[in-house]
Amino acid sequence: MKKVKFYTLGCKVNQYETQEIRERFLEAGFLEVKGKEGADVYVVNTCTVTAKADKDSLYFIHRSYHENPKAKIIVTGCLSELERKKIKAQPGVSLVVSNRDKTQIVFKLRGKRKKPEQGISFLEGHTRAFLKIQDGCDNFCSYCRVPLARGKSRSKPIDEIIIEAERLVRNGFKEIVLTGICLGSYGGDHKPRKDLGDVIEKLEKIEGILRIRLSSIEAGDVSDRLIAKMASSTKLCPHLHIPIQSGDDEILKKMRRKYSRWDYLDLVKKIRKKVRQVAITTDVLVGFPGEEEKNFFNTMDLVRKITPLRCHIFPFSPRPGTAAANFPGIPQKSVVKERVKRLRIIAQSCSRTFCQKSLGKKMAVLIEGRSPDNPGFWEGHTDTYIKVLINSRKNLRNKLVLARLKKVTPGGVLSEILTQKPSLF
Image (cartoon, rainbow, N blue to C red; front, side):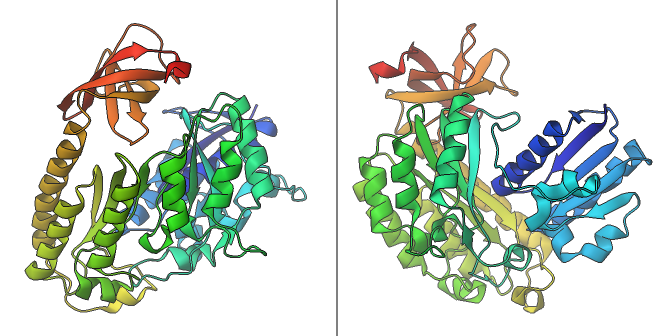
């Protein structure tokens, strides 16, 4: 039996697409291997959001070659989409496949005719299922390469989404995470036009889905309809990941972001007024060309004001083919490193503040597995995406439990189980 190994870089969309590829290989009779065991075929699903993502993608290509120089190495993903010649020249690379043809890799490998895409039926290593409903992006922010690699925004038909979600539920998944490159643009290419609200309303009717969660969504795509749906739904999680990128209007304009700091702040205030206990998580890009201390101060100030549960902070790196790659005034690396450190301290404080407001409350927690960093504890999340730790000898994997949150720690919020019967809450 032929052996296959997968390496995945980047976002939830890439993780979903690797799962699509995995299932096609398993259906074709391949055996998936992990760890140090060598394989006959390697699939490296690359990312190019940052310079580090490029470096990591190349690392896994080289690692595959060193594990088995005779293996077929197949490379796909956003880096290979934009740097095809460079990737093709790497030792051991047998095939470079475009993003649009990812699901056809096993058929290309065997020289067979294409088969229709089938979506996924499980998600390796996860108890929450990512469900890709949208691809591509029309925004063209000045620092971002992704629209060049992914193309225009396009949306999956709702009937296909429902069929896939029903299959995932039959296989034991209780939470569905809707994902896309620009998730909020879903349905804009449909006739008649659709939006996320239409998808959510259909998914809510599926028996067995306990939670529906949204991945990253742009501020301009958080509609009044979506906010109202989140406020009234018993299944849509009160959690929105809305990237800030910067809290300074001058930098936001250079980034080609379509909002101001006050637009963002007003949006968060409106959401919090309508949706009880809603959690906001975000992304911040530090060290953009022209960012001075006064600009960075505004970013720190906005983060403090919105008090996000989580804040993903990453330094700017010039991406070839983007407008910002040629912008002057990139801060020195030492300055960027120091700013990242300062912002991380603020973000950690905001996270503690948000979590402390939930102490003593009873909240539903979906347990995902044993905590890798806290022996003896199970790890899961509330609907507001608070990470919870529960000490129990029982097998709680993929169980929805009612818990009381007790103490905030660096590893998560220590909690106690009250009941394992979801019907009670």
